[in-house]
Length: 309
Image (cartoon, rainbow, N blue to C red):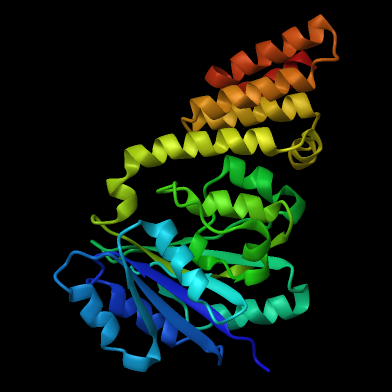
C-alpha cells in the first residue's frame, strides 16, 4: 500500500499566493497525498478562506485563532492522517516530483530518516531565480552544521511522523526559529540525509513575515544557537571540525561572531575554555590569543598558522 503523505500549509492573510501553493501540492506525482490548509486567524475579510474553500473536498481546510506559524503547523500535524509530514509555506511552491523523490529515497534509507533537498529563490519583484544547492553533510555532523549555517529550507524536508512523536512538535514560543529548533532536537535521535535536487521554489517578496520580523529573528537566532552550542558534545564538535575540541569551539566562536551572534559566540568561547581546562597555562593562553585574532583576522588565520608552524 502506498503511504499517505500529509502536506500542511499554514497561512495568514495569504490570498496573493495561496492558490499557487495549493495547486503545487495537488500536482504532486506521488499518488497518495492529503493537503491540509490551516488558516491562522486571517484578517483579510475572508479572502484567504474563500480561496481555500474553493477547492472543496480536494483539500482539508481548518480555521483557528491567530497563534503564528508554529501553532498553525502543530495544529496541522495534530490533524494529519498520514505517517509522513511535509510543510509548505503559503507563498512557496513544490516541484511536482518533490514528494515522490523523497518517499522513494526513504524506501531505500529506512523510516528513521529525515530527508531534505535543495531549493531556488524566486524574487517576486524581478522574477529572477537563484538556485541554492546544499553540501552533503554526514548525519553525525548535522547538528554542528545547522549551528553554524542557516541554509536548510524547512519546506524541502520530509519528516516521518514518528520523529515528531519522539521529539515533540514546533515550539510555539518561537516566531522565526521554530524550524531549526525542531530539526536540532530531531537530529539528536534520527538521521538527516540531503537529497540533491531542487524541490521547492521559495518566493521572496516585500510582505514576507521574515522581513517584518527581522529584529525578532536576530535575537531568536542568537539565543537559539546558545542552546545549540551548549547541547553539542565535545566529540561531536571535534569530529565535525576535524580538529581538537578547543580549536573547534574557537572556530565556532569566530563563525558565530561573523554572523552577528554575540551571545552564541560567548557560549562557544566558554566551551573552548572548558575543553582546554586540563591543558597548561601556556596552551590556554595560546587558545585565548587565537580567539582574539579570530574576530579581526579570521580570513588570515590559516596563513598565520603556517608562519607560526
